[in-house]
Image (cartoon, rainbow, N blue to C red; front, top):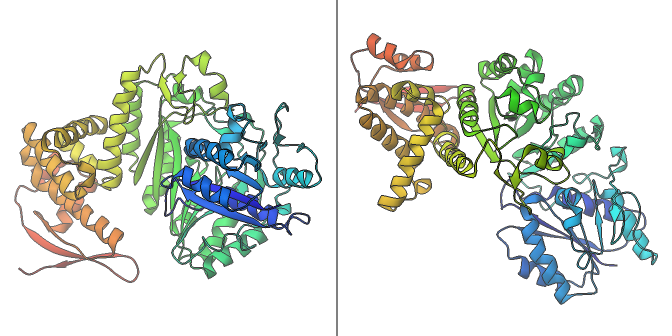
Length: 548
């Protein structure tokens, strides 16, 4: 038996760590019966040709080939498996991953010999051992043609060998690398759009000692960034404090990314996050209680703002997620959610069109809610009774505008002042920006995404305020923007920029909290300044006046 596990990640870089495939490879390589059989990893990205990948696998003389299939790579693997079986019809082909678990009925058993549903370490090794003995694969989480569906979720995570400590991931864990890391599996919440919605996967933790050892391994290999995959990192206050204390003590040189619930934050957790090089991602999804109730979530706006304030007061970097097309959502409700989100001052806003993932309770109830969606991966919403297809297209235009102007442009610290100057809401501002970028694309043949983002922002600000006949707000607004753009440039590149502003530094900084109308009344006179921006050894920012 010669085994190959094939992975296909989104892209090279920080999204190219194939944790699922590595987990299966590790389980095989350390299984008492299978460890004597060769097991290799074929690692690809969506940029790679699936037909060429199949040809390489067919030429590898592997007898058993497993595919790690997710929502984003389903089409790639459909092409891969079809070509592989044409070239090597005798190969035993199997598949696992979230797409397989969610939608096993969509897989062709004329191509695949068996599937593994759920978490596949134990079910995959069991199936391969059975094949070695000349038996049909069967058991929890193993599905072959004609079998009833079953799922496997190992209850004792200590029985699973570590991808990191085993050395299986050695080729991916290099100085400067980004790594996916599990501390916990499962989630106690049952959000209707999520794979956890039916509660079939209980919450299980990897031991503190194992996490400590894995952390030492990551540090020794000078990993730069770690995405912690726990669905809700702060679900258990005591364990969260324990894990954060460990990271604060040992891992100041690694940047961590966590997903969490804002409502579960408190002063102690916020203090710990503030001591760590990290960013947080929070799934707001919508600011409408009615919309959130339909997906089994509760929302207390005052409580949410109070918890977000814990982060903003400490300067903790965080992002917020929104979903387009949830039950009872509409374009006006989405605009309200977007306005609320911008008001929270996240560093990034990630907006997604709803995917009706098979196997989730929302997908099961799509008909009840009148949701029309794509039948194949990625199962994206097309329309709902309250969200016509045209309105979803409008929302996606706002998403693109927000991605570029706000998130890529790092506008969180000054966009509120822009809204004041333009006398409009953030969602209206994004609509204006979408119109402006369409003009650049269609009339000038310019791709806004390829432009220098700071230049694009300044051009848009000047254009819009001129059209609105509000040019008098340009000097303070452009100065405030340049201040924050300069700091962002320093943080992003490590280079020391020189900025030019129209007011004294301590004056323009007042726009953090002062309305621009009041600022102009208090500061009628301009005083041009040119400043260099530097970062001191303690991480603080300094400004040095430039003599011209």
